[in-house]
Image (cartoon, helix red, strand yellow):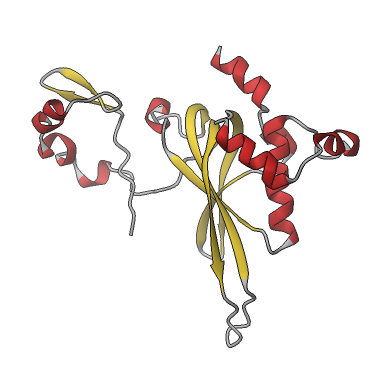
Length: 197
């Protein structure tokens, strides 16, 4: 089981901040386990999910997973596309006490069952939201002039930054954290660049 411990990116070591993005081996060796694991166990966040909020992200990679049909359980075969969304910046977080800077570089995995229409539709919404094409503008969609996979791969190779809203919904006793696939919930790449200055 993968449990994410929500440690701040900057940790105090001998009264000096340790930048985990640039830390040397010597600095890491001097960082004690007591400093990392000495807090009260109740102070750690065991969630692997992002909190509800708005994030600037880029798609780091895509992977595929296939499941065979299970006739006895009445489950169809499926092929799922997993997108690894790397957080660049947290713009807004529902939990005011969360250190937004600590969410940078976190990865959210968004899954799309591309053997079902709703999975393909949501994937297309994500791609259109990233490039700033209105979902109902058929002319603009036609002008994109390429497959969703080709456009997706361009977003991945270019590490294109865009904004998404993430929300946790409880269903059947489970919490699922997913991208909101509604047009107003996306920040297109050109607007995302304005946030980055």
